[in-house]
Image (cartoon, rainbow, N blue to C red; front, side, top):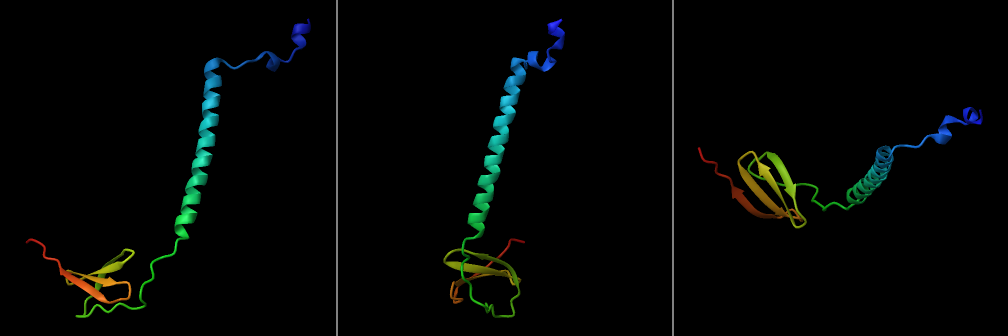
Length: 104
């Protein structure tokens, strides 16, 4: 009669495969939390980097219309609607102009 009074959870034990699954889910949860924290940390540090200083105005000349822009640590380039790539140093001084010729 004393056996009927025991709570059923006292005798319950997970099968070994479910124990393994429970541990795997716990490890996966911890790894995902660490991954999210690392990604947030990387985003915060990378987005707070100082940008390359550019001049206030860029003079393209010839009535060129800018189509695209790219920059590096030492120079920047403007692609114009005249199929030219104009390269400038960080002070805004023109360095080189490349005419792009596409095959017909």
